Image 1 (cartoon, helix red, strand yellow):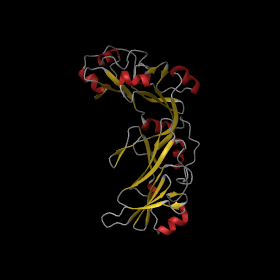
Image 2 (tube, one colour):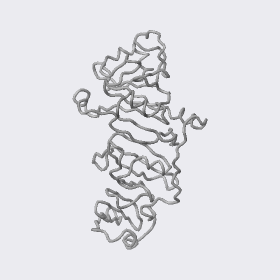
Image 3 (cartoon, one colour):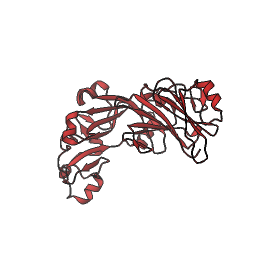
Image 4 (tube, helix red, strand yellow):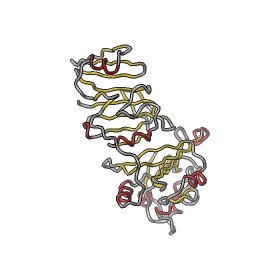
Amino acid sequence: MRTLSLLALLLIITPLRAAENSMEEVVINLLKVGNKYTKETIIKQLGACDVEWNTTLETEDGISVGASDVYIYKNPEWQNRFGTGSTDSFTFLGGILVGFEIKTDRFPLYNGMIRVGESIESLKLLSSKPSQIEFTTDDKGRITSAVLNPDCKALLAKKRAGSLPKTAVIPHQSKALELNGFTLFSKCTIEQLKSHFGQPDSIENLDSDGYKILLLHYGQDEIEWMDGVFLGFKLSSDKLAFMQSIKVGDSVSKIISLGGEIKYKKSARVHEGEALGAYIAWSDSRFGKDYNVYFYHNDNGIIESIWLDYYNL
């Protein structure tokens, strides 16, 4: 697969015919990038989506620009025509269409002039002004995807100018990273962990390279202790709450309340050789820089497991 920005394409294909289609005039099913719409209008023009959930958009330096709605369209028949993972998605920030990822021919670009499956030569229909849309092609030069990533710097400028709606969520004010009220990375004994979380179903010894490592099993949940420190956890049930608020079974939209840095990842993460599902990685510099908390979720944006991974602690 090859990924080419429209700017690069302009350098290698013949001059394009003059037209009025600039980046600000990209229209998909009568919805224009940069314009604000109600949910009713979005559904009317794009059709009922398969998945709708809330997430956040981040600038390159990790600053949140607010809550956004993501609408995902998928169909099992598309996998036969376009391959596994062929889903279309649209990102709206405060109702403003700010990005999309098109992998099927359901949603043509530029009022129907560009469509997945057509030759990349169809881009000659566009204006000579380059856009930020990236087109992926196969070996035969046919378009396989069209992606517009939100310009987060521009969005942040709009937010500061007061032109974007503010999120109503108040960031978590806790002064410690914690699980059910017990501070992570704190020094403790195994007996103190048992006193707080209860008697584990079993204790697994994972001693390695001179380190004393114990894994406490509580049903589907695990708590890790190493050399006198409460070091990590893996939650697969709703018995324990992270930061007093988030449990397995909650919507990923609750992660926004933690503040800090949030990064959404669609691709599967590989952990110790095991391919895992889609996740959101979260961390907060107030609590250190050598850890990530991973929230694995399903297509409906429901958290299925929560992991904490540490590095060089």
